[in-house]
Length: 106
Ligand code: FES
Image 1: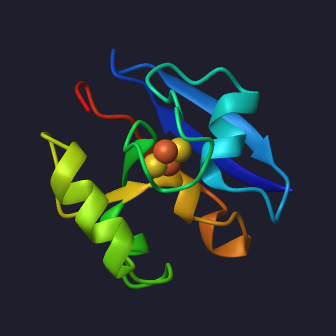
Image 2: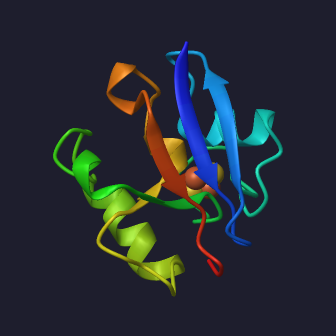
């Protein structure tokens, strides 16, 4: 299991145990994380699974793909350097101990 903590839009934290191989979006939905809607069910077509990952993960995770980048540009009004679509991040050991922030707006 991989331990991931979500920081919710109200600033509270929710610690979760995540199974490797799931997407970060699926883990968020399983744990009813506020602010993760996932309208397109992981097709990278809606932007409603926007999260912001810790700076130390920027170089650890697989880079943002071209389609993910375009979708973040198109949908995320609150895009930050650590912005990602959580449906495009697979859970593995690199995320163990990660703090993943949910933006206050999409
Ligand atoms: S669930 Fe729609 S873009 Fe991630």
